[in-house]
Length: 487
Ligand SMILES: NC(=O)C1=CN([C@@H]2O[C@H](COP(=O)(O)OP(=O)(O)OC[C@H]3O[C@@H](n4cnc5c(N)ncnc54)[C@H](O)[C@@H]3O)[C@@H](O)[C@H]2O)C=CC1
Ligand SMILES: N/C(=C\C=C\C(=O)O)C(=O)O
Image (cartoon, rainbow, N blue to C red):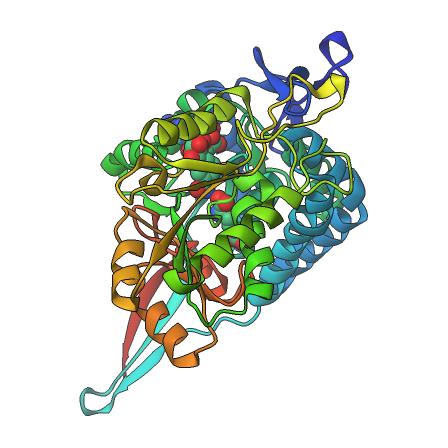
């Protein structure tokens, strides 16, 4: 919809209707730094209306059979798939990611999220145990919890939002989704498809705006009993505080400081391109991205040389360029934050081998004010440095040597996060041994980001609370009851 100055103007989606808001936020095109869209700056009033709509829709939706709900999810998946190109173009413009990534990863995965939960909801079974000596049979039943608040970040906008909406509504809940105010467009586009897919009004409501205003109104609302959040650890802390008085169910998917551990028997021909990708895909703005690379000393020099060469080949370009490997970062503030880590590393005596401040970035004149930076490799950096401890969430990775297996496990585990690790070795015994000892919710060995949606996804320590996946999301989005029958 065209709004002020011909710019795109989004509206909230509440009770099956698009509704204007009394105030709006500017949303920027990361590749130019120009305002291109206005996003509703919602608050308590909009949350109240969304809660009312979600409450009214709950009895009807929750009493449908899993088969009926599954069909609706399948139709929505089909409609999203038919709009794949349009959604990919929108995601690329709104987020700054490359069109290739949006086409091959973000939007296909959003489609898959609905297909996956449309199927998995049909296959859950409940538990039953016998106590013959007491003449008792015990079994469990599950029921949807109610109105779910779903809060998602800006890095994988539709991908992560649908990873929450799909299991929540498949299980019979009604939802109020709040996408990041920085990347709201594809969620709004999805709302245009809901009626055609057969999603009844009020089952999926989307309120746009900032965390402190609309986010807090949502998470502290007494009639919203569960919250699924993906984002930063400080925001998770705030959500936990606000929801604590109501004892809400919480699922928190947070950041990482993910290690790659590369042993001397690794296949470097596979490891190097994959580790470049795991460090810099989506501008390093994925919570699963590698940011600490530990390399066994005997291959350290060779690895470093080849890794830097491969990083220099990683093309930074305008997001709409299909040959670009990396686009623009999300915002000016984020670009400055990422750059500040490189400055700190320099001051601490680390060496920047390529990227920011070393190589030259060539951009068309129209994109000079965009939020671009080159993929950057840091070395000679201490484990205590903030670059090795804190989540940077940008195209920056540190490479350091190690000597023994025990030492590298201890160093990899020495951060507050525990989300994702990769281990590279030709020894089957070693990959199992090391994977088991890493404090990490996910370990990929000799690969990265191969997702099996059935299995638990999530982090340990400060990387989160709870897991998502076929069974885990079902358990989160339902309440279980144990029933005992004396016969
Ligand atoms: N999945 C991840 O691990 C992600 C990590 N981050 C990290 O967080 C840093 C900051 O990025 P942000 O966008 O500011 O992340 P954030 O955690 O503030 O935002 C994520 C979502 O939470 C909402 N939100 C923010 N404050 C809230 C509050 N008080 N109550 C309810 N909802 C609230 C935001 O509007 C957004 O929808 C990044 O630099 C990165 O390090 C950011 C995005 C994703
Ligand atoms: N939660 C994030 C990524 C998840 C990826 C997946 O489920 O495949 C993130 O980057 O915040």
